[in-house]
Length: 240
Image 1 (cartoon, rainbow, N blue to C red):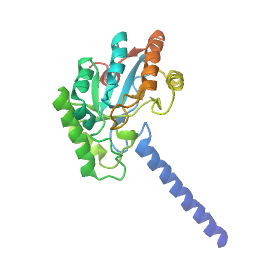
Image 2: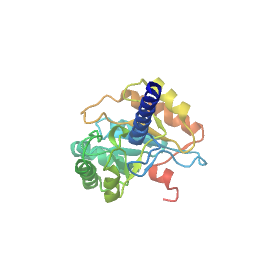
Image 3: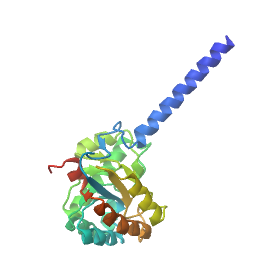
Image 4: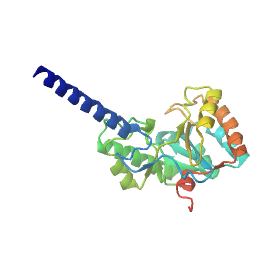
């Protein structure tokens, strides 16, 4: 009897671990669509990639824009509503540079354990703010920290947003430029979506020097390898 009870406890524990593992993947797994429709890479048959930048706009965003302009490439900037309110002119510079703008919530709040009403308001306020100041209403949404939750899917449907994760994340908020370049260049492939940051959550005057230097090296490196740079819309929907 004791043997069978022990086995039952082990099976129950394994079930709990499996459920926990599934939930972790559902919340932050790059290929997860559990909490709403989401993409994490484009067509592997096309030698195209998408650079994406989160947490902006910031006072340092123009440094990124200058590099992209110099090489004639486009990117997608997932902007935070409150940062757009603080720096509307920089937000407009992103659009005027031919880049796409995505929704990265209004306050960069962690959405896990939040209610559906809070989540919907975070996404809606960012949509309205970005449209007000740039004239562009986002089609794409990236959750802060890549964390989705119950209610995200409903908010995306209401606002006609498609979720976007990434193929490669540069960890550029903590790595030096050499390591960022090595990580991205080492993982790049056809259809890859690269996640970097032109801001640091809601901070004013963030230090993104390592990101800027990494972008300065990565863009010509990948162009030399035959990659083209596209916005998320172009990468996911090539006919757009």
